[in-house]
Length: 170
Ligand code: PNS
Image (cartoon, rainbow, N blue to C red; front, top):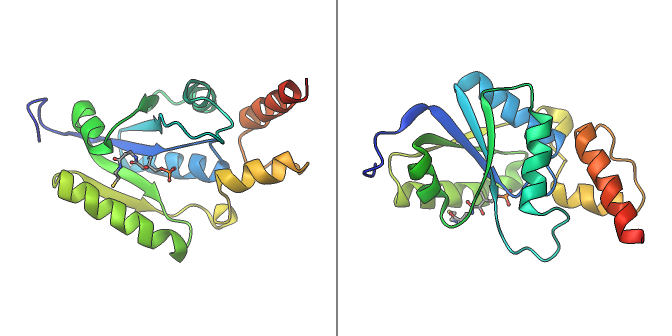
């Protein structure tokens, strides 16, 4: 590890786009919180043109979802994930695997991150079966076409999505 000190063995980072956070993400975060003392949900700041929520909005939503969990922190990051992990002295990256189709990309990322920072482990977690088909992209798609997303995203997300929809109709 770098001059910023030894890894904090109790902290794991759960990185992602979270546009928006789904019940699948929530499930993985809560499972991870049983394994690690602290979870840092790290929202990637990217220039995605089709994004529904700004990074600041995503952080606000996720903080709201986990407001009763003092061990779950939410932050944004940009640049390399391993640099951010070093800076925060995290010892693990959490990633969710929903199906075999996720595996190849996740395996490549885990090994690239290990190449860049050998002491940082990637831990793969499986969500509950009922969330294995969920993705932020599909949630946005079905919602924009009029579907009810209740039960697929936290209630706070549903509220925010409806608010966005109202604003876009003006
Ligand atoms: O939710 P996502 O979009 O699948 O998350 C992807 C994420 C944010 C984990 C990945 O794109 C990432 O780590 N980006 C930061 C830049 C970086 O470190 N890239 C190299 C990854 S091997």
